[in-house]
Length: 298
Image (cartoon, rainbow, N blue to C red; front, top):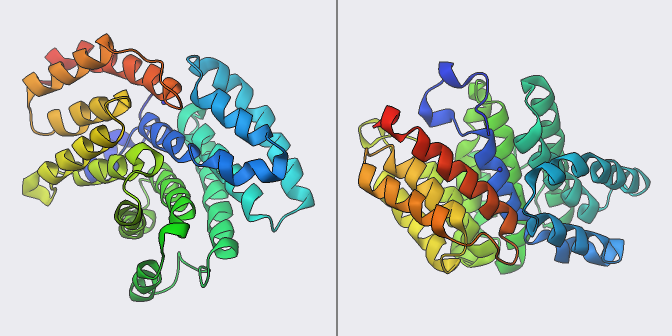
């Protein structure tokens, strides 16, 4: 939830994630979406989010998503200062662009829209939360330290959508420079509510720490701990954690035995799980792709 960006071959691992990974991570952010939006749309968003997350047909989700994007934007046009609708639109635009849009320019446009909407929603929803993208980092960090548990859903959405925008602009080092803010936001979520979104913050943190090998400043062992924490929180039901541990850590550290064991576990597991079926369906597809290419990699 997968093909790499067209700029992938020209960029170091430090600034790359595949389109699919961010779709997976955005889906984990959507687990909190229904409770935020349901009061405004009378249960529509509640039911839609459940239908998406429990679907075992990614193609159907892809084909149906644009209609809902138009619907949400029509509602937003009549209520442009609704933090709830801004959040919903941002989540769906980011997920759709990350998963299904192959053209880099179009993907960048959609991710930019999503990021701007989420920054606006955060400004409206949280105290002193405007201009988070441009304020000095020390001030940004101090603001983040003041956030409490009630801020977690907004912070998680902000971090995940902001990360998607960075990935879509991975050839722009101005965008890459904002990764430190995204990591800080996700870390704050992990500190405040480790269990939120099935431990999704640790999934992000695991990815961040396994972008580079140790010789280049990466911390893959810490990344592995984050992945294992996400797996523990989800009680093993989130199969994508194992896939990402195999791909991000197993391949980075050339641990073939761990890599193959994790992926075979995924293929043998049941995909159906409340709120995780779509993610698990994609995890199985990705696990098979990684196994098929393992001999060429190791």
